[in-house]
Length: 505
View 1 (cartoon, rainbow, N blue to C red):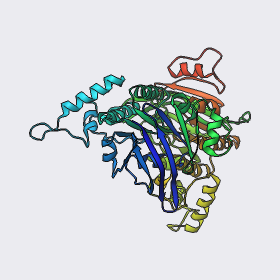
View 2: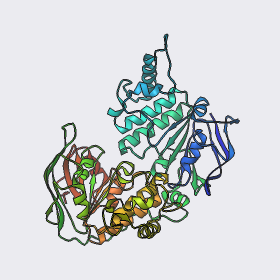
View 3: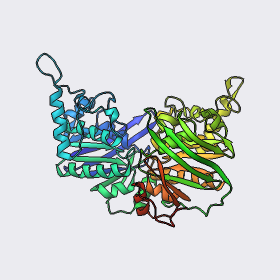
View 4: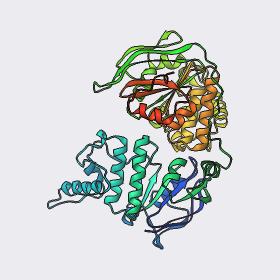
C-alpha cells in the first residue's frame, strides 16, 4: 500500500508542531523519519493514525484521500502503529490483548478466544516470534511485549506499519531481532514508517530517510549518508559524535561497595556478592545486557531496594541501611533508567519537577511555603542552561519530548552539590544533539572531582564515557577492565566469559 501525506499542518496553540509536511512511502518500503526529540515526528504519525486531526493537509492511501475520525478508522484502512510506550493490558494474556477492541464472539455472545489464539500462533510462526498466546503480558520481557504489539497490528491486516521509537527500551540483541522483523515485513509487502533518532539503526535498515527539524521537512537522505551528515541535518549544526575527555585526575576512593547482594520481591538473588569502588574524578561504567542486576544495583545504591546485604560506603559513611532521603541529602545525584516512572511527576510543572528532591526546606521552601519567585528564577536559569525546549517553566513535564524530559532530570540532579552521581541509562530514548549535551555534562561532573557511576546497555556510550568498565552477568561482576577495552572483548564478557589475563583494570 502506498502512503502519502500532503501538506500536513498541526498546531497546538501558538506552537506549530507540523508545518506543511509532505511524505511518501512506497509499498514494501522502510522509510525512516529522522529527527530530534520534539521535532514533530510522533505528532505527524498521530495525525496519520487518527489520534489528532490535522489543521491542514490530507492523508492518501493508494492515491485515495482518507478521513480518519479516530484510530479505528485508520486501522480499518490498513494502518497499524507500534507505540514507543506499549498499549497493552499487563494482566491480560497475549491473545486477549490481540483481540481487545476487535472481539470476535461465538454463539451466545461468548468471546472466541480459540480464534484469537490461532491468529497469534499463525502470525508468530510466520515471523518466528515464538510468542505464547496464553502468556500474561506482565510476565513477558520488553522485547517480546513489542512483538505482541506487532502481532496486534498484523492481526488487523495492517498494510502500513508505523514504528514509533521502537528501540528506545530494547537491548542491543532485541534491537537486532527487531531489525530482522522489519526486513521480513518489508519482504511480505508491508510499508513501514520507522520513527527514530538513532543513526546506526537508520543506516542499517532504511530504504529512504526523511529528516524533519522543528516541525518542517529539511531534506531527504540516503542510508549511505554518514552519521555526521545525518546528525547535522537533524540538529541544524555540526554535532560532535565523539566524547572528548582528558585523562582522569584521580583522587581517593569515594564509593566503596563490598559484598553487596540484593534479593528482589519474589526472593531471587539478583545482585550476587558484588564488590567495587569508584574514585573521585573517575567514571566507572557498568555494561551488560539489560536484566543482569544493573537496575537493582543502582537502586540499592540510592536506598530503593529493601533486601540488601553487604556494605555501601560513601566518603567513609555507611549508607547501606539509610533511607532514600538520607542518601540524597548526603549528596548522591540519581538519574533513573525510567524517567517517567522514577524521574519525573508528569502532571507537575517543569519548575516543580526541578525542586522535587528539595521540597522540605530552604532555598525552595520556607515556613512551609514554596518560594515561588526563587523557584521561577531558578527554573528559568536551568531551562536555559540545559537547553530544555519548552513553552515555559509552567509547562507540564509530560508535555515535553523524551529528550527534554531527560534534560529536566539532569538539570535537577546536577544543580546540587554532589558527592556521587549515579546515572542509569542516561541517554535512553534521547536524540544525538541531546546525547552530545548529556555526555559533556557527565564528563564535566567527573572533571570536578565527583565520582560517577554510569549504567548503560549501549556499548558505544560505555566505551565513550568510561575510565573503567565493570561488566555484569547474572548478578555478578565478570570483570573490571580499562575504558579502552575493545567492543568484541566486552561483548564476550557480557555473555559471561571472563576477560583474558592482563585485561583487568
